[in-house]
Length: 329
Image 1 (tube, rainbow, N blue to C red):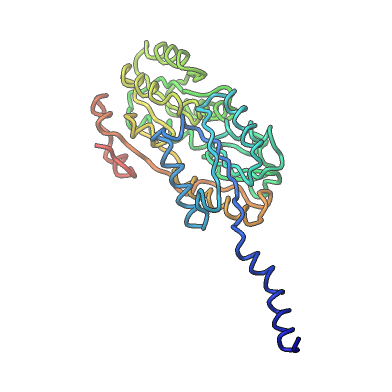
Image 2: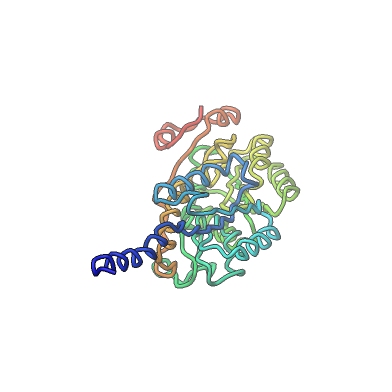
C-alpha cells in the first residue's frame, strides 16, 4: 500500500468514532412536575404550566424532543401528594418542579438527592426546606410565594374597600405552618385597624361551609383567604359562600378574582413558573440547587372584580382602583 493511501485510511478510521458520536441522538432529560391543580385539563392550572413550558422551550428544552415532562396532580390531597411524590422519584428524573409547600414536603421526604425547584412556597427556611435563602444547602431551591408581612396588607385592603367591617374571618390551613403564621400576622395587626379576627379552617369542604356560615351569622363581617393549596382546591366553594353571605373578601391570588371573587393582592405565580424554568435549565446544565439562592417575588398584582363589588353593594375607592393592575368589569 502506498504511503499516501495508508495515511488516508488511518484518517478515515479516526473519524469513524466522531461521526458515530455525532449521529447519536441527544439524551432525553426527564423533568417531574408535582402540580397543585386537578389534572392536565384544569384550565385554571394551564397558565402556570404553559408559562413553564414556553420558558423551557426558549431555553432550548422541548417536551418530547430533548426532555420528557411527567405531571402528577394531587389536587390538595395529602395522601395523593405522598403517593405521586414517590412515583415521580421512582421515575429517576433529572429534576422535579414542585408547586406549593404541600407538594414540596412529600418530595423532600421521598428524596434528598434529586434536584428540586419549587415555586409558591411561603417560608422555605422556617419550614426547614432550605438552610437559608442565600445558600439553600440541600437539593431544593426556588421561589418564595410571599413574605408574611403581606398578610397585613390584606387586612388593610379589606378595610379600605369595606370600612364598615369590624369582624374578619381568616380562612387558613392549620396543617400548613404558613397558614398559622399568616393568621398570626393578621391577628397582630387587627387591633390597630379596629377589627377582631377569628379563624375559619379549610381542611375540607364541609368544614369550610360550616365555618363561613357560622361566621356570617353576625353582621359587619368580611373574609381574608390566606395562601394555601387547599384554598385553591376549594376556591369555587369559597367564592360561592362569600357571595351567598354577602361577605367582602380579599384573596391571596388573582385566579380567585377571575373566577368571581372580589379582590386579590399577591404575587404573580405565572411569572414564578416562568422564572422556575431558568433554574431548571441551569441545574440540567450542571449547577447545584444548593448554590442557587431562593428568590423573592418580583411582580405583585392587585386585581378587582367590579361586577362582584356591585353585587355586594360596594363602591371601590378611586385610590384603590388607581392602583389596580387589572379591573374586571
